[in-house]
Length: 188
Image (cartoon, rainbow, N blue to C red; front, side):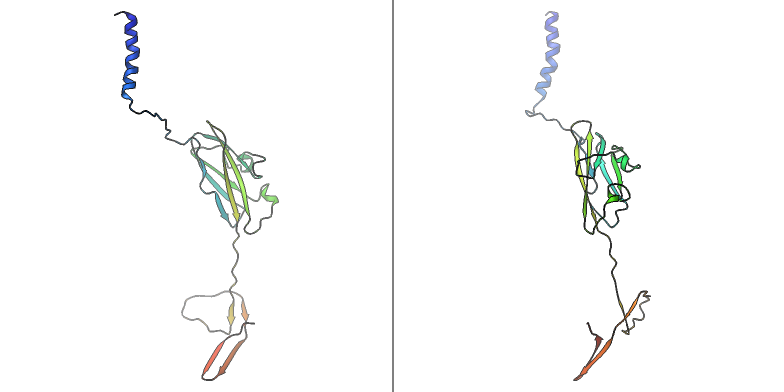
């Protein structure tokens, strides 16, 4: 045997062992971590105050730069330009920004009850193209419930409750006839 034959055996033997050891005819590659992980904890936020709306997203280690848009994606801005406490990229698997109506463009808007405002986000992973996400913020302010206390009606005792509020007088009428008596308020 010459040197050339020995080299062929040294090269072909591991290759032959590799091919013999493989029994799967459809090889596949799997990644244990998501490359495109950029998902908000909640994408539909309901808030009673547009003064402070905190948003949080979980990110993959492969996601870097993040941008946001208030006009449906026509213009994009860095989160640090909007909220100085925000980061312009995902760090330690998280991204956070606080939306507020004290800054433009929300400062120039008047919100009505039930109005939904969409904010778009995009993140750039190291591999691949932009990842787009949308967060919908619904303005639903709390409304006071007016409760009237009728003057002249029965007094509740023994409950340990103290009622504070405005008292509105109501006419009390007594209806009688036959063998019964009805007492109560007449709705007008």
